[in-house]
Amino acid sequence: MSITEILFWGLSVLALFSAVMVVASKSPVHSILYLIVVFFAISGHYILLNAQFLAIVNIIVYAGAIMVLFLFVVMLMNLNAESEPKKHRMLQFAGLISGGCLFLVLIAAISESAQASNLVQMGGGNNGLIKNLGMVLFKDYVLPFEISSVLFLSAMIGAVVIGKKER
Amino acid sequence: MLALIIEKLVLIVIVVMASLVIAMYATYGERKIAAILQDRRGPNRAGPFGILQPLADGLKLFFKEEIIPDFSSKFLFILGPSLAMLTAIMTSAIVPWGDKVHLFNRDISLQIADVNVGILYVFAVVSMGVYGIMIGSWASNNKFSLMGGLRAASQIISYELAMGISIIALLMVTGTLSLKEMVLQQQAGYWNIVYQPVGFLLFLICAFAECNRAPFDLAEAESELIGGYHTEYSSMKLGFYLFSEYINMFISSVIMSTLFFGGYDIPFVNEANYDQNWIALFGVLALMAKVVCFIFFFMWVRWTIPRFRYDQLMNLGWKILIPISLFNMLVTGAIILLKENNWHF
Image (tube, rainbow over all chains, first blue to last red; front, top):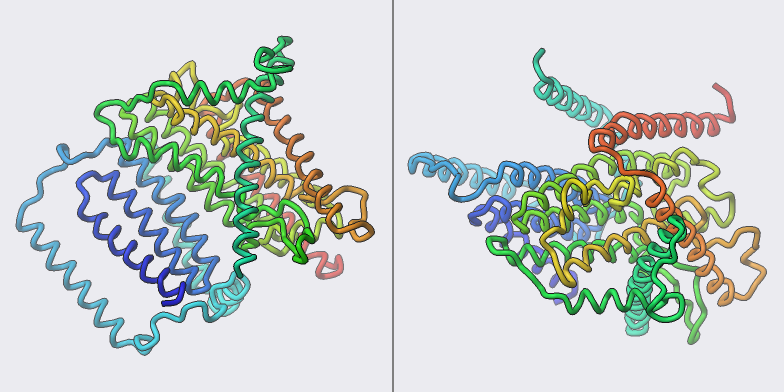
């Protein structure tokens, strides 16, 4: 096996194991810490695909900022196994079935797509490099990019409106 | 291939060792400078001028009793300080410490890895630094620790924004993310401080906040929170936390020198005229001289300016620094655009 293959399998095992542990671990804080490990493993995959910019931004935004806020909320609310409300057994079944359906749909979509035969192109292609990414984002996809930023802005304003105290 | 691996390993060991030794003597420097500013003598018992004081401090920390509180998560309690130390050291991997050296018939670059997303890597590692404090403070199972940890986290997240935007303006000027490229550009032209004085000021203030240094050391405000996030820590685990602060200070001084003050560039000297190895050596010394100035500045501020109140800290970050940095970015962009149009509107 080449080094890339060893890295690929190592990262995949790490990502899947941590993803399972996010669901399986009892304490919410441990779940979040496992989720951070998942993000790191995914960033590793990005680097294998020669998309360094995406990898680093994934770490800065998801692992570095969003997960810190998650951790923040969980620590402040002091959630733990005892204080967690008991869910009805039927609700758990419903969750299992709907989650499983989503999983099936995703697998079907991926296996039907044209990309299925060559899912992973390791080390090939320069699409992920910052220059090419910028060209694509700001030339070919300017409109969707700007619209999504307006969406973010509206979400921010919404948060401010909700957070503002009523007079 | 083997030679490359050996070369990089040696470089890594040297850089890590050097960061540790410099951080060690930064503690000594801090106590001496505090003493001078307060008209005292400072440490002067261990060795001449107290020069062995850091060793004595380290030994003392090693021999202290190690206490892990009950009802705390033991694994996370140990993970906290380890993460703080790890993230503090990791940044040094992409810093260009000097120019190429010619040894054993090989050109050896004095940079561990020239990553093409250089400065973003620094940001990623810095944003990871919060976890060391947060995990440690939560695992302590103590409300003062938790308060300190939460303060540190919210402070670092708020100041990261202004820091990032001030860096964007710099990147618009340099057009590259690689630290090595930036140093080469500054060697050829002027230092970046000439183009980005406001950006540098913003970066400096944010660096103070990111390092949890006074006047922004709210996370360990002893008058309110006992010891802050490391209240429950003892022995070398406490040492790791204290030490990582000094390493962070050292690394952020290095980053500031590299981004805005020409890195290993020696001012008023044309590097091409001299022998390669000597100029590399003096380049490293020039970088170190700049770094020592910054570290002194960090300490000078700590012993001069009183601590902010928490709401003042947040107001400064969100209501003053972020608008200024956005404005700075806008002006920089406008000037670049004008320049490309040959100063026609």
